[in-house]
Amino acid sequence: MVAELNILGNGPARTRRTEAKASSGVDLGPLEGWIGFHLRLAQNASFQAFAREARGIDLSPGRFAVLMLIGRNPGISQTALSRANARDKSSLTPVLDDLERRKLIKRTRTRRDRRSYQLTLTPAGDRLLQQLTACAERHDANLDRIIGTKNKARFLQTLKKLIAELAGDERANGASRERD
Amino acid sequence: MVAELNILGNGPARTRRTEAKASSGVDLGPLEGWIGFHLRLAQNASFQAFAREARGIDLSPGRFAVLMLIGRNPGISQTALSRANARDKSSLTPVLDDLERRKLIKRTRTRRDRRSYQLTLTPAGDRLLQQLTACAERHDANLDRIIGTKNKARFLQTLKKLIAELAGDERANGASRERD
DNA sequence: CTGCAATAGTTGGGAGTTAAACTATTCTGC
DNA sequence: GCAGAATAGTTTAACTCCCAACTATTGCAG
Image (cartoon, rainbow over all chains, first blue to last red; front, side):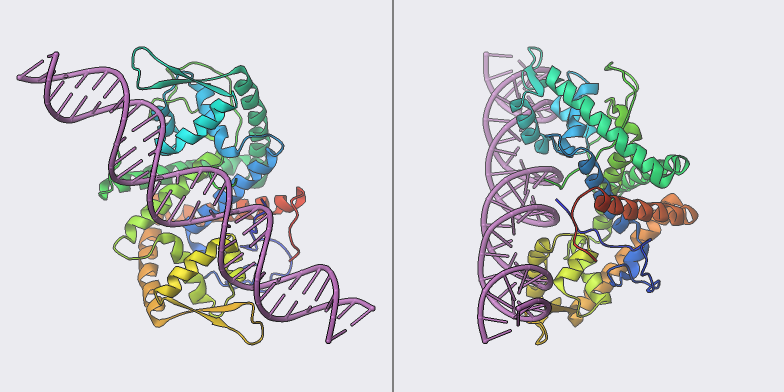
């Protein structure tokens, strides 16, 4: 589980190569200043930090968002869930299979539309969601500590702007994306 | 077990369906304010935007960083490259196989240490790298336009801080890690 | 009712990732 | 030297993801 995120020496001693070298002595070149590269690293780091916070809980972090979204939107369909989670619906199938097998969620067929399912948490699922929410709160507090509560708001705003604008470009640029 | 999304969180408690919804009509709940969730979305969007910028070039965006790192650090070993790129060394093997097969890089065994390779770009690899660099510069300029040149510096700094601090936590938190 | 488009969910293929086991080589201590 | 630890790279298995094709159901002409 331990990844070797060893880049970007931003603090530790032994930083003589202030130039373009990171702690590993590798020249990142233009990557040093590129957003996309660091977005990936940050996402990675954040993911692992949360996984650490939630270790000991038998549920991968990726499933947490699913559980949360079902908890907040009881009766939601798989398609709506996949949209909210920004993943293809097909990647949801095995996840929900697993959560259902572990009796954390329930898939109920409706008589109105027998194609779709209504997703709900079981009591066990709700309990687990609450445990994970506690982990997430610790993690979030951690981020606050790191980047500062004030900066966090601005940071989040910039992230959202990036997301919205790039998604808009996508549409303008020809790649098709279904709209709602 | 570690390769997907990333959630953090905290949040109010409200369990109603049709209200305070995001664009898709779904209540994101606490996810709305969580860094990790939006980091994932932003990374995703940025990745796709770059892919769009570089479409028409026969090289996936994921390989671009590899090419760049080799170009800036001729003779680098696969292990050092994997660290700089923050990916497991095993994921590098098929990528380098492919790049080598396409005559973009060269793997040279050294007599000093016959376990390792020295990676270098071929002239073709160097030409391709320059094409991709141009794409990346357009992409980066695009990001500048979106978030503003001034904010970009702060944004990048926050990203780096996040990366560095969370990686530091990893060590403090018990995950064993080889010395450096 | 019949035919056909649209929708919900599943399946399969390909790409990318990690962790662990493995091979080959180098290093260390005796 | 030689045994054993450490290191460089590869392989394998399992996982997540997307996209495209598929099945089943619904809705809508006609």
